[in-house]
Amino acid sequence: MSNKILIRRGPKATIPQLDVGELGYTTDTPRPELYVGTPSGNKDLHGLQGPVGPKGEQGPKGEDFKYEDFTGPQLESLRGPQGEQGIQGPVGLQGPPGEQGEQGIQGPPGPKGDSFKYEDFTGPQLESLRGPKGEDFKYEDFTESQLEGLRGPQGEPPDLEDELNVATSYQLIKGALDSGTLEDTHELYTENFLLIKEVSGTPGGDIRFNFTNVERFNRLRIHVRYYGDQPGHNLFIQLYDYVAGDFVQLTFFQMSKSFLFYDLPVNDSRFIEDGEAIVRFYHPAAGNTTHRFAFDYVGLIQSFTGSQGPKGETGAGMSILGTLSDISELPATGEAGDAYLIDGDLWVWAEVEEEFVNVGSIQGPPGKDGEDGEDGEDADFSNMTSSDVTTALGYTPVDSNDIVDDLITDDDKKVLSANQGVELKGLIDGLNIPTEAAEIGYDNANSGLEADNVQD
Image (cartoon, rainbow, N blue to C red; front, side):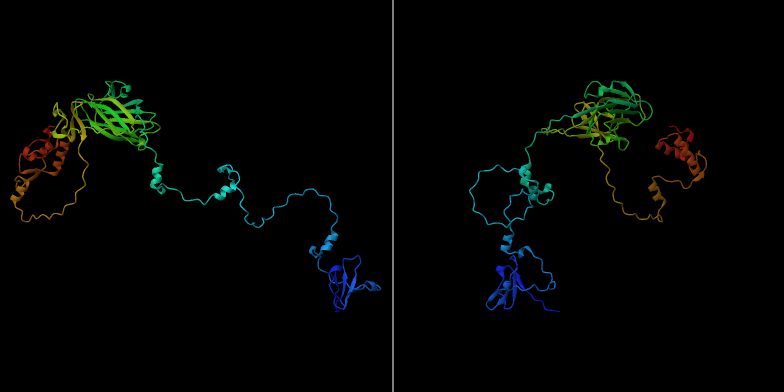
């Protein structure tokens, strides 16, 4: 492979001092000028133009010529005359911001601007100001001073009146109208009332008052009297439970000489459905046509608690003076606090009615069962004598008895068989003989009575 001869090239003004024998030529002259290095400097060889030599071999491809390869004079020579100003081109893309400059000198304050308002914020500004979501604020997070600051002045109590609902109709499931109308039950303490009489059969009374357009109520208020010639009967006050599908008892009372007032608390929406409610007065026992139910008032009340009233005077004490067997034994007069017990109910003298009024049973709820007693010892009959048996029984038993199968005997040595005892019990049960009479009937060995002759 032959050696290559390299020749320097470039603009004329930039050709350096060539080594002795080194060649170089210009690239910026109309015609390339060839120089050779000599001890005395570069020697121009264009005057020694010889004949054109043969075409040399193709040299290797040179490197791409770039804009930065131009020299200043070359760029200047390439620049043409100043042209006319062209049309404004489109705005280019925003370049990256430059480096932060140094802080300038503080200028004088400008005029006061308008106040900055919330609506002056842009969406991105508001978003940048929003911090992370905090935890929910609870009541217990308040301090005492914060709660005190939130508490307003004491307001005046609301001026609320009781909401009154009166019956729109009534049904006599068992009972008959004596006198009066439904409207007589709409006002309290009037001389007019709805009077219903019992009818024969069981039950003796079932009167239902129907209410409509009822939104709420918390009291059942009634003024009623139940009376007749056979005292001691009960009348039950009930409300219909729409959830359970049956009537629920609120209270009951016995026949009385005067009207009784009841204001019963009721706090359950189970007794209302589609604005309807039913109050029932029920006498479950057999009816007596001489008995009457007198209704002066039946109402469902939504009562609101009022303000605290003044302290009342000390009432009279109550003194139970004794126990009576029937209300007919009650005295005609009494003093405040006088009371008697009749069949477990307490009858108290009422000064307004001027008579004794039944206020209900005073028996408390049953107590808890007592603890079981210790096991007793087994009975020892080995040393028992006939006198011990006589003492335990309270009488002297006969020495021996023969069993007979006959209901009639005068022999005190004879006793009934089990078969005749069963027959005798059936006869007595059929005659509805009281317990004490039945005991006498069984002891036919001493009485000598015939079971068929025993009278009720």
